[in-house]
Image 1 (cartoon, rainbow, N blue to C red):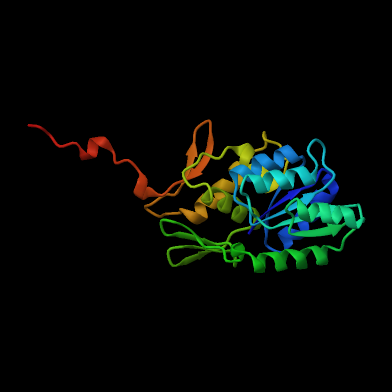
Image 2 (image 1 turned 90 degrees about the vertical axis):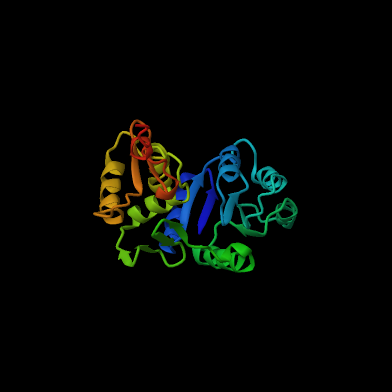
Length: 238
């Protein structure tokens, strides 16, 4: 399950992110309303946690825009304001639930579970490319009949690539998704993790799924959509 956390206070955002990741959720962060709208338009989130007090567009406005964009992911609104009128405003703008700060992380997790049980997104299909499968619910990864033992970071990178099958994912994209917005794009840590991931996923398999795009980044592609080598398939006219 992928959850978008929209919170401009970075300490709170990091706190929520760590707590959710411990529960095996995949988490993406946005620090402004505009950034949240851009991410939600591109990605399909299972749930959105949205703070009310944001720079630029506030949470109420963002929530209304999300619903107008037909983005119906379950949404929990966070606020430091305790007035009943504020809660009503949040629910009327399209929020599914409301939580006031400071809050218990256990209560937030319980509300997340409750919303996910209600929604259709509670059942998350397995990701599959060729004979590689990833189960977002159990976090099991298999290549054919072999179960792959991945680290937490390797799993998140693979999940990110598989959800964007055929798309070139830059190091910055991968770094921000896995390590957060403080990621140093000049670091070679992604290359090291990809190398280990490729060794586990592709190894000695004849079909290699993870591809390095020179000057671009990485992508994972289904070999059945590859264009055959033209020289191999051209018949002689003589």
